[in-house]
Image (cartoon, rainbow, N blue to C red):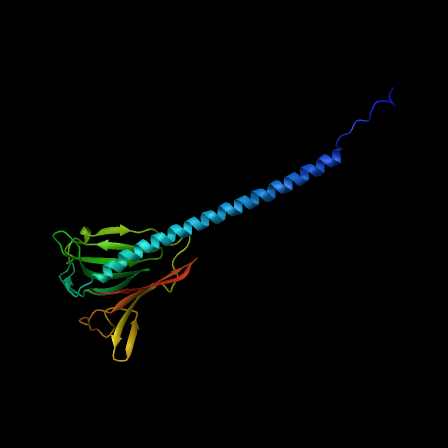
Length: 208
């Protein structure tokens, strides 16, 4: 009777172990592939958002520079200030300017753009003269770099002026020759040395 009974077929222990190993390898590969796709998508979305934030920041700065007028003002001590000047303090650069188009009762407004290690900030005063330092309102923009990074050393403001010999590019304003009554530069170039994007340059006209 045992000879007439058909033999039972199945998987051996070795075959089961091989199948489990193959399945485990395929699962790991699939997981790593999915994770790589998700990481790439996350990085792409971050970079896209950062570029959008940068575009908004540069648009506001470009509008301010286009509205610069040659009007001298006073600081909180009563000293005369040029309509446009670049100041350095610590790790930041501060581009101060007088612009029109403020709206409301104050048609002119003193504004400053601060370039620090993470990006740009905008300082606004209610009028032209800096009567009260505490009246300044700070407008923050999104950081252009990650928390553990900072802008490169090439970041800065550069001033383009027309001279008898052509277009000259200056690194300070007013010019170092002490001529604070010099006419406004024709344009300002902003250079942002971004760790993951390289140098971003934007040339913006000055004045109405």
